[in-house]
Length: 393
Image 1 (cartoon, rainbow, N blue to C red):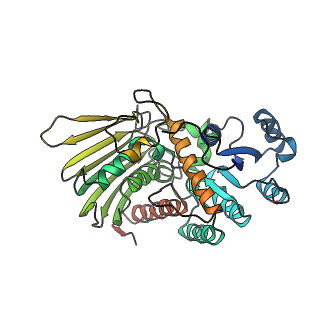
Image 2 (cartoon, helix red, strand yellow):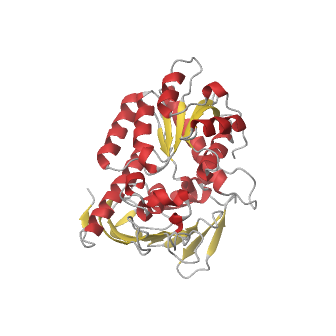
Image 3 (cartoon, rainbow, N blue to C red):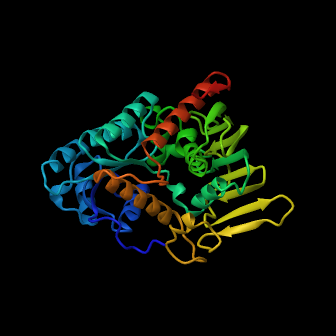
């Protein structure tokens, strides 16, 4: 159980780019990073408006001389200090992710980056190589994967409880953008601008979340090929607000040859708050997880009553119970899931600093971010060519 005791010799000196006042995602980053005393917020370039950023830094308790007008100035000035930053989180619109991540790695900093990591596979491969060259950790905030039941699913699949995986049905289909919300909501407006959001909205903004979750559940999963169709149902949008993807998987220890993955990524699913669900169907049993009820997961064996597995219960695999933050029966949520990921990021950063390696330890890393970028590219390629099948490798 995680009880707040420190896991590092000293908190990692940490800064943010973006995530200023009014940013919901910025608040989630700070709450998660600071929860276990593994990070200490000491600097930031919080806002494109320097005066507004300075005022917000004061509210956060960041010293005025460590609040910077932009990320370039911050990296340069912090490098001159003996107590300079060691890591940075990037919580900006998508169009800045690659540039800031690259600059941070070149400055010798660890990085936590919002998804997508960048816009193209060429950029992603460059960041993967740079992270390896600099021996720096890049964590990508696929925040839902920090929920305890994802780790339970991983262990159940690894131990053969489900048998061979045959079908995966996943969705992230919410309804909040069913009308032209971008006309009145600045936070939504940039998401449909290809220059700021990249080549995709629904696939990139929400579809990559369940994609990483199934990768975390099934580490040996490999996509063979895929087919995608996408639409912009709300008139005037440059990027899709709805997409469907079918993927064929290669056979592996956990996955039956020819297994299928069905993905629905949407922002126009009227009435749905999130619609983020994962169902994994095996030859022995199935599991299903819903991120609006993240503390439970159904476990269904043919011919037997449906079981509901509960977070924190003694019957879960030990690897899942490690990330308990409060006794079973109490509800944990998004902040705890993000805090679990930030704890993993901190452990990985500390290991990199000390030249250490670890065994069966996962977190959404730079390769995970690159995989998400590649998946978006392949989906867009398929959809733009009449929903044809596209080889993944």
